[in-house]
Amino acid sequence: MVINDSNKTSSVLEQCAERGHEQVTFFHYPKVGLKAVVGIHDTTLGPAVGGCRMRLYQSESQALDDVLRLSEGMTYKSSLAGLDLGGGKACLIADPRMTDGRSAMFEKFGECLEGLSGRYITAEDMGSTVEDIMTVRKKTKYVVGIDPAKGGGGDPSPWTAKGVFVAMKAAVERVLSTKDMSGLRVSLQGVGHVGMYLLEHLREAGASVSVCDTNDAALKIAASKFGATVVTPDTIYDQQCDIFAPCAVGQTVNEESLSRLTCKVIAGAANNQISDPSVYSIIQKRNILYCPDFAINSGGIISVAGELTSAGWSRSWVTEKVEQIYNTTGRVLDLAQQSGRFSEEVAMSIAKERISKVRESKLASQREAIK
Image (tube, rainbow, N blue to C red; front, side, top):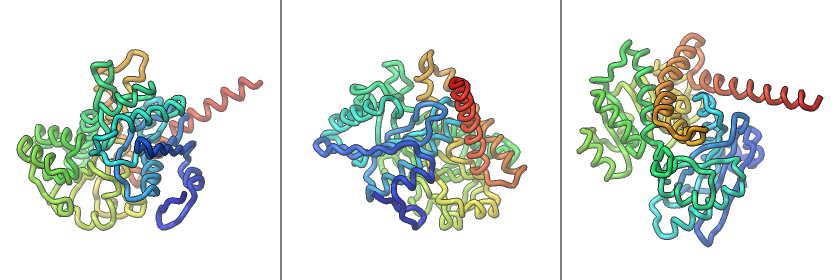
């Protein structure tokens, strides 16, 4: 199988080598409709953890590319959040609205994960639910984000939204010298699980919010419950705003969208928001403050990581860790300003440095053990 990336064709192994992946596994069980890809990027800090995304991709190549990008992002996300976890991701090529055969498919997926012996631990993600994760749990213990009634943290979406919100405050403080969000205009792209919780935070803080989504039911809730202004997915880029918040699919921050955005800050929950590094200079020239996605959307992984601690999931532990995203974001933005480097590059350098130190420490211990 080959995938298309930046107009070049590469083998799976070449892509893994380029991105630093340790393992990519494919599962195909047509009797239950399971067609899945699991990517394990780096396990230096600990087992790979990442959500199970359920989506009807245009092609298997697109699904593979998504797995590779997202699992790599999870490595840096966990590292930057100070978690002893590696990066992984699963993508199920299936309609997230499916009901018939859903349980059987997720049970089989659980059997597949059990075969990976804990190198990858899954959780909810776009298209999957707590109920799905509990179904997977019937076949394997390598799941997090489980039902609170069973001792877990449940849906991590509220924590992801909380982390993005406190990161927005850090960015606004640097642009406007205030943490006060009242009166600010936000263009919120996507009001799914995370986006809706973020909308609630923004409205409670007094911000004016324009939203778009392909889900009409979600838009109705956004408008009726939270007083959001509904616009079309295409015109979301044309709204006069202080903050643009991508909270849907990735790569929506690109050359075309940047030519239309009027914002001072880009801060959202979506993964892989930037199309490619070529837009770094465009963002800098526009004097837009970009909050790296993997630095600010780590609230979800923090929540599920709480289930893996010796004490088990704790609201106070998760809250403290998520609120630290404010300081992490501020550190990244300040270092970017001081060095003239793009914020995403700075965040990645910090994440990679921690991984490198742990890797070197492990190698030193191994050499010492051989003596």
